[in-house]
Image (tube, rainbow, N blue to C red):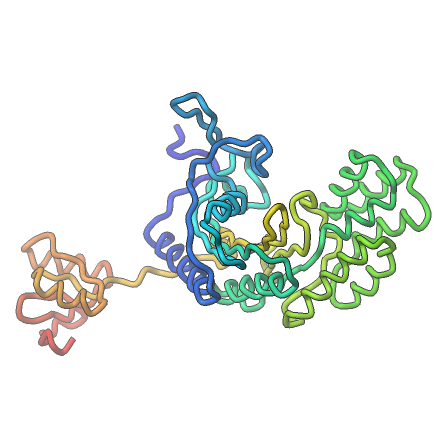
Length: 376
């Protein structure tokens, strides 16, 4: 019998301490940029058009209505903002919490319960706002140990505009988009044969697979940006990139995911030795203009590797009064659970705790030296 559902996990003290530390570092970066904390309900009313509706854990409420566990933050943050009493835009909000998806998703590291920390900038649609979110995302990754992380920037509207030149029906265009998203050249070539797409249009679609790299990619992309929509998407990417340090980003103008959701620049951040994105985000001007990003906390932990060892408590204290004095100094003090001093010393040594605090003095356990409390 399984103790916990598939796609979930226990966190031992060492792992959970590490997770709390990483989450704190991310939240402090967002705080320093002026993002205010919010939280949304873990339970939401099920909506069949919700972006995560097909992956949602569903529950039946006592009145028979269908609920769902929160599967992403963006939608609920937008609902929260709409309920604000006349906010002054732009609004900067940050969040941190658990999400749940019913299906095992390879892009989420195959976890069905996971944590995201992210920020949303709502109420404005400008190049500067897009660049701000990208900059915050990079600083967040720096803070948790990824100074070499780079951002891949694209615009699904560019791919959409190029595919529109095929004049195919929507189902065929969606099939092409899926092949492009997977970077699957044989599949894309086969589809183009099936749909009888030839000449310069065929070459432009195939070129989408190779539009990845530095600034030269913009020039290549300009060669197939024949429509106004394609040119506008390309210019949007160029303007956002111009606001960022060039050594921290690459262009991926073949990004074809979620173009019905994202309306502008989108991005994913990678570190050289880890194959999955550490964070991602983009612009979604649907109703209220907004741009945001999220960091996958468990993904960050996996990329970093083994959790650091726990820092042991400073001391075990036999006196409540003495323990309180040292705790007010910011030290971790474990309370004695027995009057047996030998047992306390044995446990302290096993845990790596350096001192035993008695009523009038301390014992340094490494060598048994007695020390005045005021000298600690």
